[in-house]
Each structure stands twice: as C-alpha cells, then as structure tokens.
Image (cartoon, helix red, strand yellow):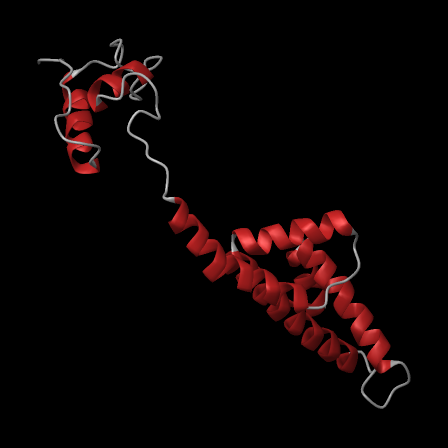
Length: 174
C-alpha cells in the first residue's frame, strides 16, 4: 500500500478532504508519523500540508465589510435591545442585567426558547401542585390553598432547575 501525502488542489471542500483522509486511513498504518500518538487523528502538520494552509491561519481571511456589520447592528440588534429593555425584570444588579442583555442579544433564539421552556415547566408544576393539594384534601375551598399550591410549585420548579426532576416526579406519585 502507498502511504503518501497528496496536497489537496481544491479550496477547502469537505468532500475532497474526506476523500484524502479516507485514502490515508486505508493506506497508512496506525503507527505512522502522519497520525497523532498512534491514533487515526491527523497531526497538525499533515493537515496544513493537505489543505495548503501552511503559515498563518488568517492568510485567506478577509474581514466583513463595515457596512454589512453596521447594517446588521442597526436592523437587528438595536431594535432587539430596545424591545428587551422594555420588559420588566427582577432587580438583580447591574452585572446580572448586563449579562442577561448580552445573552439575549448574542443568541436571542436560544434565550427565548429557554424562557419558553422554563415557562412551560413552571405551568406544568403549578398544575401538578394544585392536583397534589387536591389529592391531599386541601382543595380550593380550604384555607391557604393558593399559598400552599404556589409554595409547592416553587419547590418543584427549584428541583427541576437543579436537575433533580426525578425526585419530584416520585414525590408527586406518592
């Protein structure tokens, strides 16, 4: 078998690089110097040789045009910041406020999906807590029904946030 390094003639294309790696994987022994520590991972020098990327990683990099960056900031981020600043939030201090705003601006889709997931979990736990109070004989007509069910729901959500949902699920079934 012929274990030779061939420089990829195309630009960075996954299909072509995959073919080169597959050829090396089939023709070269695991102890070859092209692999890292007797594994099947290529060394950095081999990767640079195959891709033609010897030297700086910034060699072919070109910055985004300033107009594109500015347009995205003006069209997306500033309106989002204005919208988010209007929502009421608990007073947790300036550092927490800044962190929350940066998270929402940096990845708004993930942030909103996490908020919606948390809201759905809280609604489910509130329903579970009301059902649990009713089964225990503390229905709507009882004194402090709302306080008990809300307190129980908060405890259940706290367990969920800490990653111990299974403990609460077992508690609700008993």
